[in-house]
Length: 88
Image 1: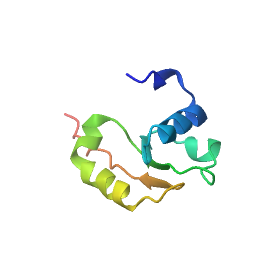
Image 2: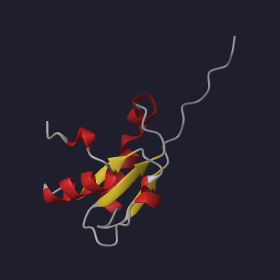
Image 3: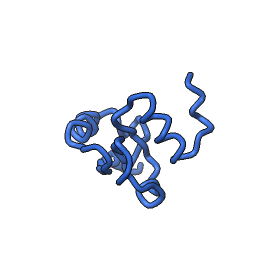
């Protein structure tokens, strides 16, 4: 445990960069408006839906985004919602 759970976005990004991370994956839809990445090395992959029940069948979309994202940039991954079950 790194003790990063109490850090706010800017401090968290700085700590991740200092620790050598290239990218942060988040579901925080506001981070794009709260953080200026132009002076940062880290990239951010933003997930439209981070619930594991939706995400688990779309891991390849996240992996593709990780391969495409550039330093100091955001990329958003649209995770499709599961099909609705017909009501009985």
